[in-house]
Length: 224
Picture 1 (tube, rainbow, N blue to C red):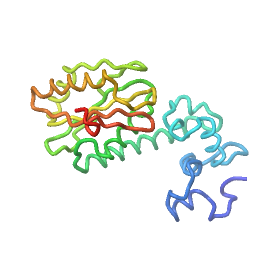
Picture 2 (picture 1 turned 120 degrees about the vertical axis):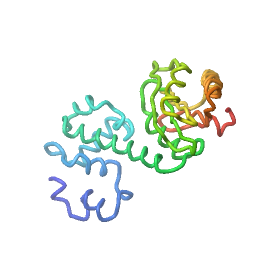
Picture 3 (picture 1 turned 90 degrees about the vertical axis):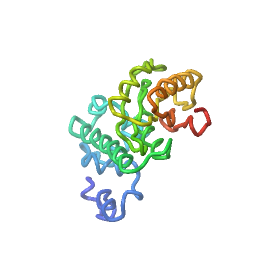
Picture 4 (picture 1 turned 135 degrees about the horizontal axis):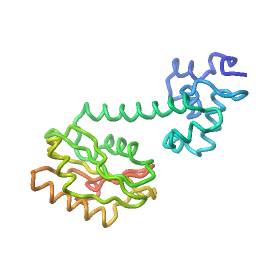
């Protein structure tokens, strides 16, 4: 039995079109993206099996495409479709930020950074470069670290800031450990970067530490 054999009112795609996404489960939304199942498994069952294997929607979406395509019922077409869906979501968040002013670490900024960095297996140091009105100029991943550290060089940050003609910066990095708490070394590098950027009259508005489920603003903690 395929989804086409279901009553129309129970099919995920039709429910999505008629009632919106809120009423659909993760498996049903995933089934709409996958479009078809495999053998006796319809798309919803395939989606449920994938979510069960990866334990969560985030873990599935963060998994390497090369790995996902090897799962039974997937293959390159479905895996590429899933990866494209994730990329579109990231670009949607970026567009939303570009269309509004950004002041410090707003909820939108934290959500965007958590989505971009929260699931990364290694530490990444990134920056949001802003203009004089605190609107986003660019998001840049500046340093890629090991599983627990990243070597951050102020001169590289200065070079990127000048190249983009930024007036303010929000820094961010992830903690793959899952604990989004600023460490003493995080505080030290933030102060070093602030001092370096003060020389060219560029403000550091915030430094956000993210994990898969949380994002902590140093500015809101009073640490800047």
